[in-house]
Length: 235
Image (cartoon, rainbow, N blue to C red; front, side, top):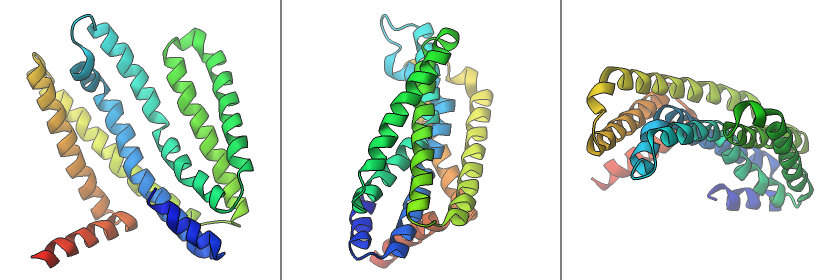
């Protein structure tokens, strides 16, 4: 939403270099948010579902199955976030054809994946197919947009994704060890489950943000420097 007016402005004056820079920056920030969210949802799916739903007739078996579906939906989160950025770029360029084609392509891919997986994976096939279809949508739009804009900052985006993915995986490793070390203590009551989520999510955010800053992810570092400058400026 924040990038749309800037992208539209660049498109209207045909400043394609500015548009490509904004698109690259927006995609990196989308990955900054969506990749750790996917990792966090994968490791915390079970306690999240348990705290929200496991009451009354909702059993532990229901929790396990719902958590498994959530994990596979989370896999496609980065693609969904990226598509939400790329589609307005096509609209700004007055090209609505390819987003429509990509939507039909995604629906077709979803049907194919569901048909192939439903007998083997049951309910999980729907979540996996949805994520796979969204990833296909993302890849299709990425290729078309790359050709349409005659390239954009793929080297920069790739290097930043490597940093973000590394920080996300280290965060996931922390969540795994946190559950391994304190799993038994956190079992036995809603309050302890909620406390587990607060500690897990809070500590992961701090760790992940620190890793991004240490790895010098450019857009994240600029954001943090601006926030720090405003805070100290007010003082």
